[in-house]
Image (cartoon, rainbow, N blue to C red; front, side):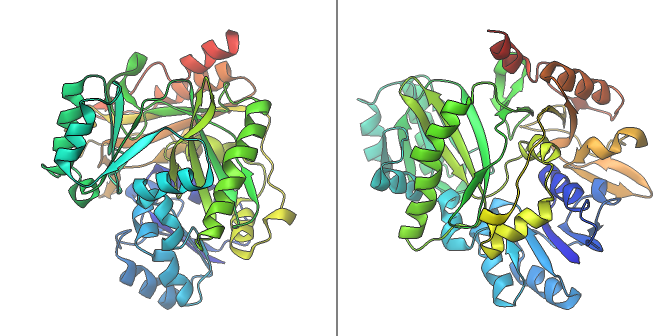
Length: 422
């Protein structure tokens, strides 16, 4: 089989490595991929948002199955365009990807179908939003409606911060057109949990839960990032909570999308807050999370390609989805200065013996040398019988990798360890 994976980050690298385990896979093309994937896939210099060129390449190359991994091409209708040419895909069509593409849509969906989430108001007029804040409870959460590279959510701890966030989004266009409409919502408290799930539009199969670390600095200090590391499973996500989520959140979401004529197939990501009043949805993503994928997929025992095809074909109910009874930890190595400004072009050294568990997110291959080319450069994952073992093994591997301005958090997984011990 000829497989095409659209995207070029650490998430896509993890997906490619897992798909490679299927013996029927002859070649995997990554569009655009990055230099660090060169040993696992054929990188093709076509951007993930260039739908026309992606479709043309898939047709010309005779692609048997496509995986559209990032949010942008999904929201832009990449799956629709490929399926119109007869190429089966993993991922939702555009009318279902809106669940991530529009915060306003997803919040209204939850309200309409009684899916637990934070109380909220929607605004398309800046002055109305500013007036509302005068009486809103603080802290509060301000969200840009559209996609914003995972950065369109601001937690405001003071009224001034809240007003500044609204002005930044709606007047200064910090996130472009994504800030034309905003959501101001209740600030929830409790442990956060990420649950990725496979779905064929009828059946929903949750994957192993995970715990992300969003802040740039140790002890959850500094700016929000796309994620500085993650562990799985999440200790706060008990069997009882999992059952409650299936009953009140997961299945109702899939059913609600069907009722709206927006059948969702692929990976639906549930960002949850375990509040004192039960689990609530913070956000939906229409695809695998990054870096959650880098700990969830190494724990998957079943064949990933087979499961993906089952979501496309509507046969998930008859397909085994099995995970290891183990723990995983992924530490992100970033460029010093991320997420604001950073230098690129430093040579990387990744020992061959650990390459299988390194997922490269930002790198160029130049004259046989691997050079850094991004804020988040790579993720280093380890799997072990215990979380302590996974954390230790992951950091040991991190110590074997070097590049010029490498930066990483030193406390990934410590909060989860403390939770297990409490």
